[in-house]
Length: 434
Image (tube, rainbow, N blue to C red):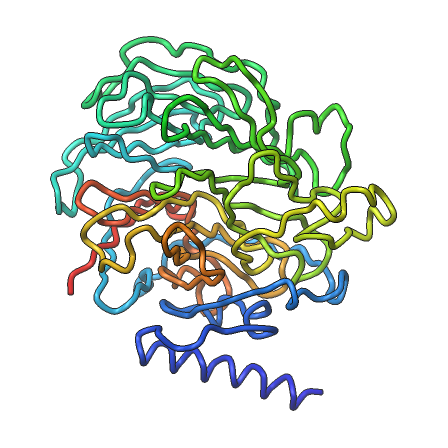
């Protein structure tokens, strides 16, 4: 057994070395190699394709509490990106910087959730350092999602998703400070606490391409407690409203924690980046990134990744088994996939246009760490290929401590990718130089 395991690990490292040497276009890691690798096998260009057939049985490995030990960035540590790209420290000294959103005029807004404020950053195209950094609004309740309305180049409002509400500020392109107090739009979103393996307090917000609908993501309060429970009402769902807060309905359900949501610029479809449940073992179930179907059901808490029943709910709701949607792109379990964005810039090579970048905050309940990186999800003609690859790595030290945790991603006006890292209080700028 030891020899076979050693051989498998050796094959993984050999494959990764080949990928790095050849600049990616080699076969993806598949099967056990794809689902079981960890930070030691991460590197820019490493590709994984995880399928339903790769899922192990529940409890095939033990669940562990292995939360990250945050340390200062070591002197010689720096994020790693593919050949031809470079990383620069764009803004540092931020306080719990989370989601990023680029305004139509190019200003970048960042939610600093713990202090309850939104900060705005202005820069000249191609500049390594911002021209202006201002506090746009304060007094918010764990803000995360930010959206501009109506869609297009001339917004009139900036919406903010607090943990328990949606508010909006009057806004015009170029505003560096809120013009007025926030206006309440949705007062009764279930709010979240910061609980180990639950709570799920982040709320993202986006508008449909035509501006007629507003979507708000709400994670579960628990790991696998079932509905109906008072503290799970309207949770583990993506909610739909009119822009004025009326017209509430549940757009999609059974999504344990849909942290990030985004609209495809190609198809207009809603996408989400999801943290799945814990305590079924190191390798189960995968987190995922997927298109969200209207009235779709994604299984939580009774099922996961299609018709796989959670053994903690054995025998419950058999009528739902065949209606559980299999997500488009399966990620390594416990990666903690957060914000996602579609690349719509002109700086990166043309094959990147339309692809998804997603921030993987990193595991706390896996024996060997996963996540702590930014991934790229290829999308062709609006359709995902099912695979994903490492784009920005290097935030775990050789002794498995952690100095960086990506949360947010956005495309800057000049086409660079900005990455919000709340582990070091930094926004990183990734540019293409070749």
